[in-house]
Length: 633
Image 1 (cartoon, one colour):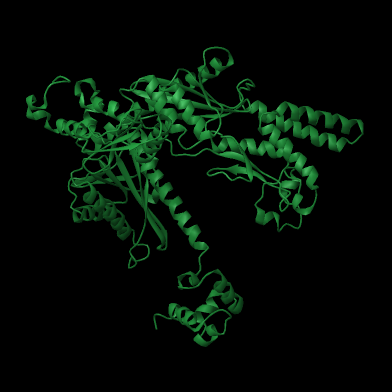
Image 2: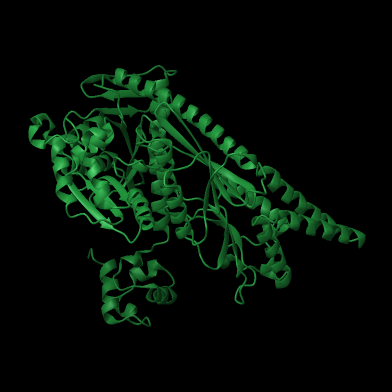
C-alpha cells in the first residue's frame, strides 16, 4: 500500500484501518484553514488522540497517509470512529487548549505525564487592620490574594523542614485563627522560641511587621541582606551589654545558616528557575525537575512520561512542558538540557498563562550548564533504579503466574479489603499493582450501601464491593477490550471468602476470572499465610520466598488504604449528630434545640409539646423532629 494508492485497490484485511482513514478523509473538506485542536475518538467516544495545528486543513490530511505514520499512530487511526475539531484564535491558544485536554482526557495515544500531585508552598499572610499578626504556614492548592506564596517545594518533607527552620529564625505565629483569638497565655511555641506570642501582646504590631518583612526578604532570595542586618543588630546588642538579646539574634542567624546550607547548591545567577534534564534508556524516559527559587534549591521530582515509543527528544520535551505547566505557573526561567519542539510558541503560551515573561533556554555553558548536568545525572540514576525495579517486578509477576498456574504474567492485580467498627462507617476498597508497581491513580473505594447488612458481616461487604465493581465492568466493557479488567483478584481471607467471591462473580456473569484468597497464619503471624485458589488444594509458600513478601506487601497496602478511607469517613461522622437526620434543621435551629434541652439525648426523648415550646421551632418542625426519633412506635 502506498500513500497515494486508491482505497478500492486494497484488500479486505485493511478494512478496519481504512474505516478510520475514510472517516478522516470525509472530514477534511469541511476543515477550516485556521488554528485549532482536533480529537480522534473511538467507537465509545473515548479520546484516542488530541493534537493541535496551525492550520487544521493542512495538518489533518497527514493521518490519511498510512505508510508515513508510525505503528502507534496507525493503530490510532484504525480505532478512530469519531473526529472533532475546535478552532482557536491563534496557535498559542491551540497549544494551551491541547495541553488542558490531554491532562483532562488522558488519550491513549498521546505522550502522557503522570502528574497527580500538587506542590506544597510556604505562605505568609499580609497584615491588615483587622489582623495585624498574620500567620506563616504550608499550603497546597488554590492560592488566596491575601497571602504571599513561596515555592514550590518538591515534597512535604522539604517544606516542613524549611518551615521549622524558618520559625526558629523568624518566630512568627503558625496557629489557626480560632486558636489565636482564644489564647489567654503563651503556648509551647513561645516557650521553645518559635513564636513571639502576639496572641497575648508579647510583641507590638510594628515589631511583628518588621519580622514578617525579614521573612519575606529571606524567602524571596534576599537572604544576604537579612543576615547582614541581623549581624549588625547582634553587634549593637552586644555593645550595649544586652547579651540576652544578642544570644537570641545569634540563634536566629544559626537557623538561617541551617536553611541555606541544607538547600544544596546556591546559584544567585539563576534566581527563580526550573532546571529540567532527562534520560532515555530501555524504552523509558525519566524527566527530572529541580526547583530553584531565590537562588536556592527547593528540591527535585522525577517524572516518567508514557506513550513515548516513537517520540523524539524535542517532541517529548514539548509535550512534557505543555502538560507540566498546564495547571501551574512557570518561573521566569525554564532551563533545559536541549531545546523542545515549538520553543518560541511554548514560551509565549507559558508567558500568557503566567501573565509575565517566561524564558525557555537551553543551557550550554557556565553555572546553568552545571545545573542541567546535575539534573541529567539524577535522571539517569533514577531511570536506572526504575529499570532495575521494573525488572525485579517482572520476575515477581512471572513467578506469581507460575505459582498460581495463570495463563500469562498478570499486568493488573486488584487486591480487595474492607474496614468498619462493629459495622459502622463500613467501607470497601481495592488497590492496583502491575509491571510498574503500585498504580495509586487506579485505587478505588466504596461506601457500603446495604442498609440491611448485619454489623460486622465481612462476607456481605465483600459481595457488595465485588458485585458493584464487576457489574460495572460487565456493563461498560463486556468484551474486555480495555485494560480495566484485572488479570488477578486477591482477597484477604480464606476458603469461605473465596467461595463467596466466586459466587458473586458468577452472579455478575463473569467467568474465568483468576482469584486468590490469602488467609492469615495462626495468631496472624506474617510468613505463615495459606493461599487458596479455585479447584486447588490450599498451599503455603516458603516464609523466605520473595513471592510471599510480594503478596504480603500488596495485602498490607490494601489494608492501609482501606483503613485510611475508613478513618476519614469516621472522622466526618464524628462531627455529625442525630439532628442532622431531621429535615429542616439547620445550624440555628440545632443551636436553639441544644440550648433549650442541653443534649441530643434529651431532644430524642422530649414530647411534642416540649419541642413546640423551643423558640424558632414551629409545630411542623416539632412534628418532624418527634417523628424522626419515634418512627418505630
